[in-house]
Image 1 (spheres, rainbow, N blue to C red):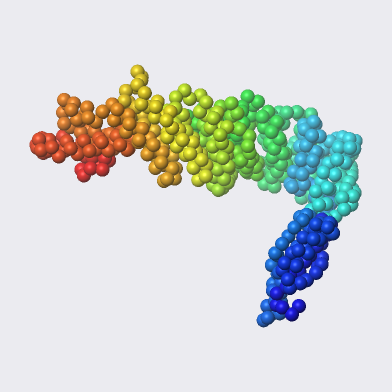
Image 2 (image 1 turned 45 degrees about the vertical axis):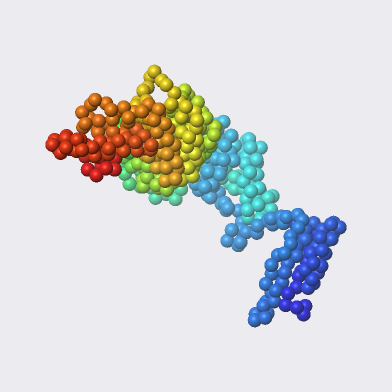
Length: 572
């Protein structure tokens, strides 16, 4: 091309095909028209026109896409680099790694649930391995569930991976059956666990054998509560210290981690009567008993929200408090965080109770920050959970029980206080702003009531305004809401003429000033027109010559008013 700028037309004849150069021209319109014609005549499924500009210094072309039409490019299968090539598990021993056990637990979830066991037990009990091998179809399906996604990830044929994992499974099962035939897993009814741990020290396969001993002790024990109780018994029979104790406690902790991963086991351990929120609170109390006990001493009302853990769960809590099972504690704490970030309601039939339990969980999890979780993890979880609290469905359920619009405003104020995250705070503030700015709110506060006088209504509005200021809203949202509350308070005061009546009341001057200053300071009336009128009337009374003389003659009467004068913005 003689010109430093030209246009190239590329086509793809099929969706997975690569781009091929069709033509090059210096005429932009001709290039675009040619591409359109190729696509319109079905000679290509996709076309692309690029502008190529020659750099005279480097003699290299810079490409800019001008037009792209047709079917999108299909993602090509990823080819794994050499260091990732091959199956992720190369030997039968790799199946015992934590990530491998987690994957086994997922692909064999139904089979493990039917037999009431964990993946760790399956890998250490000959009787379970024999049952799985006899099932045939379930083992084959599990292998396929592993091989298909791994094939897409590493680029190896599915059939090769299926054959590889079938051989690994056969070797692992054969190893277990061989160990069972040689009685390598002694029965704890006839042997001491502590003696077995000391005898196994130094042996190459000590972890495998001790895992089989611990798993064998759970044979025939069904249900999460009974199984946890048996594990606590085994922990009590472990050696007192040193490598032998670690040899026993490690498999016990691994079994418990997988035991609590199943939601049905958690409900069995803590009690089926607990809802989701109470179960999470009980888990936190189990893994952080000291922190929760300290919080309950400071605020005894928390005891109403955090269930008492009993039985095996209490035994586990005592060991956690003593510093044992740190991996289990961290795993359970992260499970609580995952549940908080899920869309599942904590208390499906009690929106107000959901906020109560959420506040309790926030306090207890924050107390564990640094030991079990980081503060960022806790904050992220509650920010995510707060998104569900500001949806239309939740807010409608939350205020459904309110019989008055004032009750709704107070409930929404509490919602603003308990949600976290800037976006969630703003969303909650919009609900509250719409409530206090509605004609219904103003009409209810202005309506004559036998239960409340106008002065009492002003006091209620003042309390609502103080609650809003304590919600931590952004300056704009807070100002808008307080202005709406103040405007309603101004209308209520103007119709009742409270300030005017106070000015004419035959009461001592200090008493009238005290009432007016409390209104002006926002204690008995919301800041706004009502407070401004009270402040103006108080200034007028202060400046009256007779009143100035009376106050100067009795300065002790002015001393109690100095704090109110400062709060109202008057010079003390």
